[in-house]
Image (cartoon, rainbow over all chains, first blue to last red; front, side, top):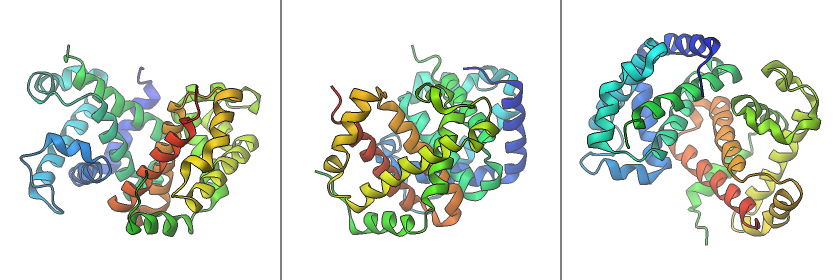
Length: 142
Length: 147
């Protein structure tokens, strides 16, 4: 699965419009993921996962920053996320299936806050982009 | 045995009352065909699916989307018996339509996004969780008679 020039342009524009809200979106995506897919909480036994948790907000900020970084270096997502890819392979070892779940929740957050942004074409491009990020983060698993 | 809390049922039926089945159904199916283009394989006789614009405007897509979401409405009336509700449709999708059940999961995820875009802040995390549970169970019920 390859990101076309149109996909890249859609993703960059989308993140441009999301702007400073990315951190908030990251936190909300995590909150939704924990509520919708409780099995994902198993990766965070050390976190307070209650409503408004500072740890979830902080982690959401990190997740969002990585997505923004990937969007800003969309021609070389593997390069941009290489260290994160190592981290996930060697230390975190989050099962690959979970990246799709977080991706779905991120799209839901964008849809809730910015429905006009999520045209079918942009939806397709963002979905592909989130898949590509998940693929990069799990690429060194074995 | 599926267990629904009273809250989950309320989140589902409450939202459903505000859904335009024709609009949401058409949009969900169109987005499925746009976002996951390989799903077009089941719709060779639908005419022009050559671009997102063509898909969104395609009358067969709209009609079929409405049909699919209308069937969802039946599920919502029978939350405690999804297996029974979908038994015949499950056989149909296996024996006649030959649809990989993964497609039901894809459509379910798309429907969630359509609802989110429509209801925005009313589509709370609890609402999403209830609906995501529903679409998962519908997908499971539709796959149940496969052999």
